[in-house]
Image (cartoon, rainbow, N blue to C red; front, side, top):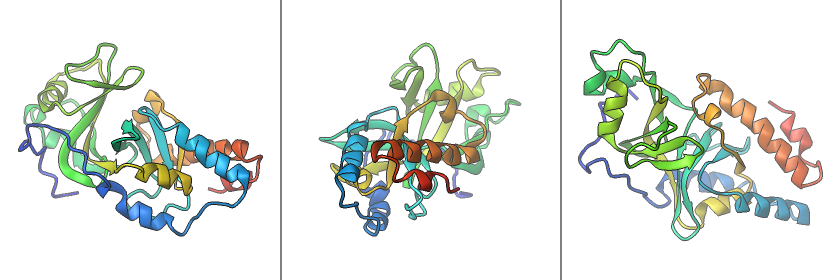
Length: 236
């Protein structure tokens, strides 16, 4: 991601959902997975779809081979069956340091960490997640004390502070689904839907997030379909 020069301010920080663009390749990759014909698998997929909500994690299944989403964990930031869904990939740090592209932080000695690759849609649009006991101005609560924001001025202030009691992570791009698309992918077995946790979002060991959560997801599938997918969860 060497071409990442900084946030695109041409839209004033506004965040756009581009329906379906973020997971078109994922939908094609899932066509080869298919649903099992038994009632247990049908019920499992329906239960998974019913759990879709902001603050949930989408954990890519082992069968999901689309390079945009292979071995990813996506935090659902916004979800509405009538409008679609928007999420951020939380376990793909880039090689670009956040301090190098924010003007207010270039002279700071504080380590800000990398920019994360939030998804394939609008890679020059920036958003961030901040953990705070007090809702930030214009922030959208995702779960507990974690808020989603596209306020670049706030991001600059957080980054410029010598110390911050509010951990945050910045993301370039996002994942978007059009109406019905995410539900279809979950039905096809492309995603495990699990509870989101703030500690996981800000885990410094991003490379360990998917291996850990895929075990949680497959264990849940095993519970829902009577243990027939238990063996899958034992494979790394």
